[in-house]
Length: 333
Image (cartoon, rainbow, N blue to C red; front, side):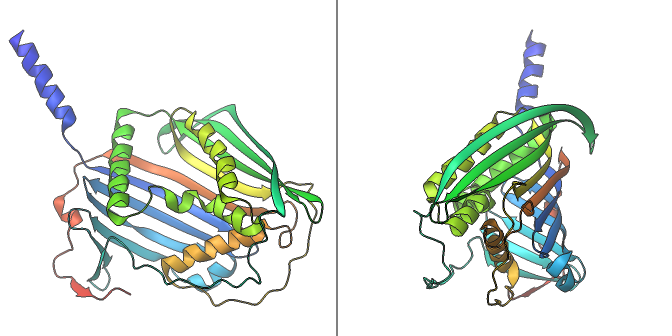
């Protein structure tokens, strides 16, 4: 009996030990009107409050493809215990250091001309969410998956022109059961992201998850609270699905019977620079094509593809969370 208790105690203690985790993902964001796409392949390693991210990003197709050049290397170490982020240049053997929080952008005065229309012009007339289990099954990256299709149909009425535009968001999800290893790896990632958001002063999940709502608000002047509530219905339906999406293939497009329109001419803006500039460009492009004055019928307004390549619990060497020996510090760009 004593021996059995010892074995059980040892097993319990082993189960509480914090282990590192490694996740590799591929994502693609595609923009309309010949803008192109951005592809990111990333491996993220975690050990408590430490993260090492390494991978590549490249721009393909359209305007982005013309200015992209070769794929860019990504290498960054985040240390929550020291509240520091190190950006590494392995080719030049240099690193830049910054704090967790980025400098606040200066307020920019927005002119009335060209801003979003008044909130009383457009109103949401329809918001329907449905999830269908297709019965299709396949193995993706070693994960057994079943297909589910989420459809979110949104009707928007122009009370001035007396017309209605219907947009449809379709998300094909290939879900896999949550194994113990997958749960542990995802928990390591979620715990880090939660602590990072707390230390950096961000709302967890605020960036990215609100892109659809922000685009609709900018394009139509819809009430932000109403828009967020409608889009939250889709998120609630996703929460009901069992498992984890190994693949999420999302498209946001106008319904086929929407009227085709001609794009308005507008003054060109200088190309933004840096990651923040890219995020701003994404938001502007999505908002621009969401309005019926700038988008032909049945075109894809925005699409994204996310794929989990691997997720595992692993002992990550401590050196992976330190600046490599011999690297020279430089000023952040």
